[in-house]
Structures are given as C-alpha cells and as structure tokens.
Length: 264
Image (cartoon, rainbow, N blue to C red; front, side, top):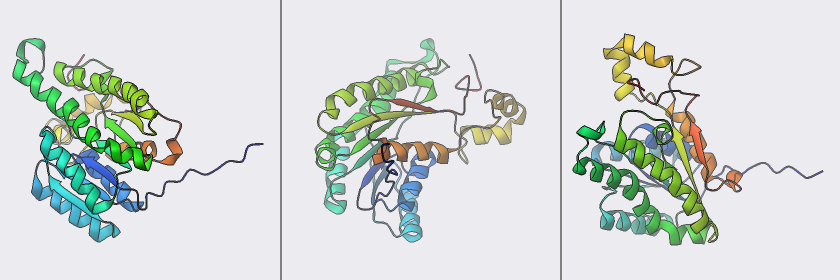
C-alpha cells in the first residue's frame, strides 16, 4: 500500500504576492496566508486601506509584509513592484492575480473604452505581474492563481466582464502548458457572488432586502459565498498539496445558478 503523505500547508519563507489585497477576497487570502506564516507582497490602487491591512497583518501574525499602492495596468509600476518584493522578501513562491473590475452591461451600452478598461484590469492586470514574477517562480517551483469568476462560464449581464473572465480561464490552461514545463503551476479560481462587507451584495441586503432574499434562492444552501472559503481554495492551489493540479478552473460558488441577481 502506498504511504499517504500529509500535504504541507506551511508557507514559512515562501513569499506570495497578492494584487487587489486591500479588501474582499484579496484581504481574506492575505489573512489566511499570514496565518500560515507566508511573507507577503501586497498591492492595491489605494494606499490608505492597503497600509492599514499591512499593519494589521504584521501585528496579528508577525509576518513580513511589503506593500505598495500599484495600478496593475501600469506595466512599469507592476514590474517594479515584483522586483522590489523579491529584494525585500526573496524570490516569490506564489502570485495571486486578484485585482479586477468591469464596465458596461449590455452590448449597446459597452463602449470601446469600456472594453479596453475591462480587458486591461482583468487580463493585462493579471498577466503583467505574473510575467514579471515568472523567473522567480521558476527558481522556487512556485505557483500562480488567476482569480476568475462564475461569470466566465455562466452568462449574466456584464458582457465585457464575463468575456474577460472567460479569457482568464483559458489563459490558465495555456499557461499551465507554457510554464508547467518550467516547474510553475497556473490555475484559476472562479468565485461565485461573495458577501463582502460594504460591497454590492451587502448593500443590497441592507437597501433592498426583498431583492436580496430572492437572490439567495440562486444558492442551494441559501447563502452567498464567504470570501474566506474562496481564500482556502486559493491557498490550497498555491500549496504543495496541489502539486498535481495545473491548468484547472476551480469553481467556488456554493452551487450558485445565475451569476447575478439581475438575470438571466
């Protein structure tokens, strides 16, 4: 009988870079990784909440945190952040491309500028730091996780957003082939609608409780997705326990049907 080896979830001295780290899934992932001793490189567009998060993680978990306000669509700034993170923490062992956003809803109201913005933040904003970090990941045998969405596979209003998230799903499969031969794994995680304090669905819960209750019926268990549960999957995909997982798109949507409360 083959001896079972317990997976190693200890991230001590294995630095991880997370984009969009100041709230939501980025914050949940940073907190979980800090709890298992990962040195962290955190970026987001707004410095004040990011610095507050970094200070709290240092205080609560005693880990090294390197943080900087960075727009991931700025190629030079993103590449410089990756390089400086390595100087502070050592070669990266993980990258979580979490920053994202979207503009436009339907074809008629989505302008070329909306397409350009959404592609830039969701796809280019993921590929740019990953490209800069790839030589480091090769040296560490590291892994990357692209944060996609349920909207990449299930249709909903938000044409540009869904299309660019589908592009990330396909990119994970391509990068698994391109980088896998160099010892780097790349996967995507596809969260469902997450209940984040102060954000869209939390505001709906307060401002439009009837709509929120109707939306909850899209989930077999009756509850929206907790960012902590998605963060646990991200951490697994970065860990040695997922060493045979490459090019996957892992849904973490609690069985959600429609991606939004507004159709289809």
